[in-house]
Length: 265
Image (tube, rainbow, N blue to C red; front, side, top):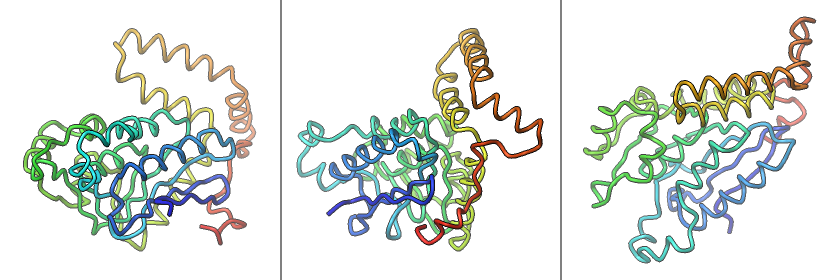
């Protein structure tokens, strides 16, 4: 039985973690299926954004601790690296939206932090409980530390405590918290903004977000100037500028929710 499901509404794909009995733990099987899904969606020109969400009351409980304890390092020989999985989202040309409809712990924090934009429900609880299991929040730190103040990271990592969705937002780990009954409308707002933007411009923006923080200031200026000039020469920029001057929607602009696809969402 598949541990994730993938469905589509218009140009939006939804990937759902579908192993609620194990609280959507990142088992070898689930990570393998996620890698395959991301790779397939990346090559689908009709998909403009991906929503990652969950079944059950937990978005992701983190690594599959039982399997790791049982199999030890042997699991690493056949499992996709969690970091490699998480970095696929940043490397993708498409925006990934986290619809965190439940709790998020440990390695799940890395999965949530890997999203471009994430929204969670008020009742969700977050945390890095690794130290209470005798290990460290090592792999997730690669994704989470760039988003956090070091003082917040010290407190959360060393104490291993659970904290609220509001605190996760204040730490920079999640973008927004909403009541459960407003989660879908909040996700719809994000999708509507994405569908108003140029796909090529979003892909370029993701490159900027991934590359500029790693560059020196002079290198960043040179690289971004070249990228900007390339974009201005592109067909989408020409069409977008013409649409702006003509006070009409750009050719890529789509309304959301799409009425024809409403039943499949």
